[in-house]
Length: 508
Ligand code: UN1
Image (cartoon, rainbow, N blue to C red; front, side, top):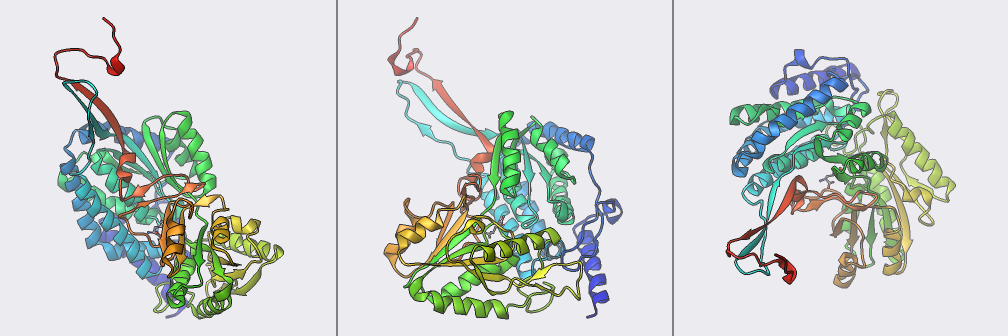
């Protein structure tokens, strides 16, 4: 296929996918055009909301809240069930949009949409299980219980790299919990957002739910600020950089709102002497090079026991050299583009810093395909041997750079692993159960996610997702993450006809 043919097909694919999802293309057309990272070509333009539009959207979500709050949770679940069906029906269309806007391979883009379907399934079940507890009261003839109530308007700020899945983690749960949702997607993924929102609108119309329960804001950083500052927004769930979290957190805290933050990861894995190296190799390469290193859960730091370091490193280098980098829609390509030029510049700056700090680039790092796609940024994933965990290794660079270090003692490796400011995901490859258990224990990994014989990325939605320290402490998706979208009401009912006071206090 010629370059021109590729270019035409990309825009056509996007138009077809949007229309299939029920988006009126004449309404979509706007000035806010984004470029596909695959070719650098501008895609379909989107509208840009003003501050007044944002204010009105939050108003609509706030107005819709009481009626939605009062809808029984299992009925709210039926809306999410229908949305999940529509997501399933349009899985390929949504994946096409994710590929066009983010540059993911079709397999990874389909996997992302599958996460939406999975969380919808989970949320439907959850809608009948918003359990509170009852506790024995210390007073006779009293009942003590905790009931979970809907919270209000939830603001969701999502990142470019998982443009639709992370929104769905939040929204499927928030909706069954009785909240209404205002979504600010990343600037470069507005089209995927429009399609996902259109499918939700259809589910809302079909189920008769209040129209205002979902609002989409197509806006920039100023618009985000408005969402974050607005006291009508009870919870701000934000995914992105630590820098963004530092801006959002204090603003919401100052108005005593709640935040759910999923910020940077700088994920590490330990490869122990007893590890199955075939398995470790595959786990490491997927986690480090998959999605072109642009997952929060991407593996960025590898600690290999010195007895197996040469052997494993050589194999990772060979794998890196054979990875097919290019247009993610082409057969066999495993590594697509970086999202934009800024990302490429950050990748280059990190590689220079690593070399200044004593690192040696063992493979990759260079730009590829610049002649074919001068406005797109493809790089071969880099593997860099580091003499120690220097300053650059403490930073999350959102690009495929894997720093490799060796260790001799597991405690030393765990200490190094935990010595960075971020705490999202972690892994150990070992066949020694004692080592695995140490890594999983409270004295082991300090991350929100800890895996054995699996890489750091690709978590399932059933477990809570999030991390500690600068990762922000939030938990999304499965387990009891739903509680973040509700407020607990502790209730005491006195049916005794007397008025005994707690703690044995006497009064009138
Ligand atoms: C993210 O990068 O923000 O565990 C989310 C994973 C995916 C989600 C990543 N299920 O890699």
